[in-house]
Length: 420
Image (cartoon, rainbow, N blue to C red; front, side, top):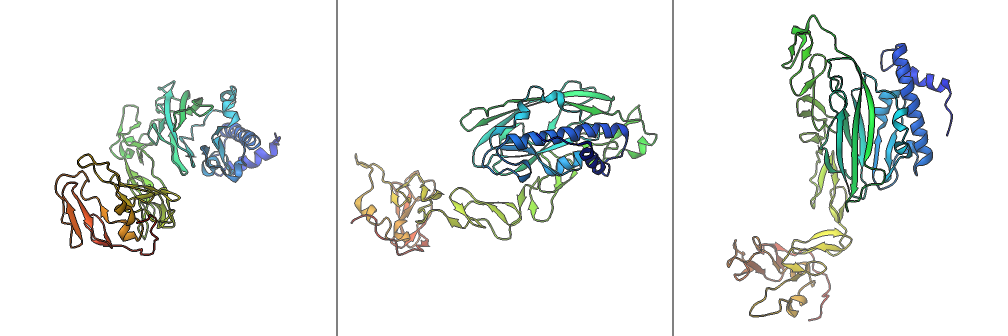
């Protein structure tokens, strides 16, 4: 592990002084914070598989404090990882870790974390969010649900540390986090059990309290603003949004976010795409589509299935189709038959022979309505279809397909994969 000189620390503190007011007490507190951060980063760099400053390169679970948040703490740009590529960082598992951490200063009221699951599925449970002295510090609050699935792509969540404002002092608090794989197996090293300390300062009386309390706040007997639910701050001017506003959005009133151009949604979680995302894709940020499995491209317009999935089938991977219940085959080209008078229910040779001679002929029939066969077709089968009342579906003429046989085939050159 590298050794850090006092001059290195002084350079960092000189940057910090531009962020917070300078005082001997604050300097000493931040000196401890900066030293701890530098040591943690160095341990992570030498112990994990990736370089902390280069970002996570693997496609597995990672959890970190982002560069902007660390810069707010220390004045320097770096990331600090708690989990890297599915492995809890060694310093988190050190039994002496909590003793070495400094007290979180009163100026810091929240910590932002970023996490992502990559190509694997993980589920989380914040099973402990507890203050051990609620006269000083209220219970920590997170900006996401306490239980759920870790997002596949990097997303930010916050841990808020609300001081009660009733008294000054240092309050211990605990955070517990359990992470499990899709099979229910706990991630090695979890549940994490962190016990930290937060400094809080009592808010002093304000002679102009009656005039300054905003947003429905009122002045109590101690001449301190008491804020209604949804607001915080000395004069109740800071609105709270849970989950927090995403993608740079700002909380303008409780639960209401003002989004930056290119984003939309209650929490600014969705993007605005000039062109619609196709094949079930979701617009996640400006002109960026998140494609479902089996599709790719700027608008999810390309399929990984070289031969298209027919009859309402969906591409679920390289040449893998998920078919509706009424169809089967590698490309959903075969119409399943119901058992009639003891029949086998196996598709006939004739049905095979029309399977892939063209996309239209391969889609000679498609389920109408809910496909349950209620004795009549729920809608008219059009000029190119015939109702099959036993099953409640439309049987289409060659060259036509769709629920009501109103769509022409777009491909005509597929070979006949089945002998007549």
